[in-house]
Length: 105
Image (cartoon, rainbow, N blue to C red; front, side):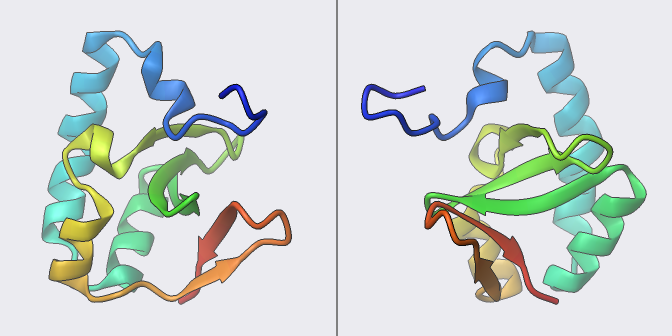
């Protein structure tokens, strides 16, 4: 957590071991790279047990089962700005906390 009390951008990936990070990249990057649009990416990731979310302007991935954030797109090597160039701008539904949002399909 940052000094102002807000969550850091990539809390779960900070302590992630290199083997887990490598595994996640191996599982998720081919799916991300093959996506034709945001809906396709969302469907494909859900079949693998992941969800797309947004926090403080960053793309983050969560576990579907627990809703736990696991890493950012930047951590995986797929930052939001690159995905916007490829897939277009995502439609994001802002949550009431003002820091998080979910993909609108």
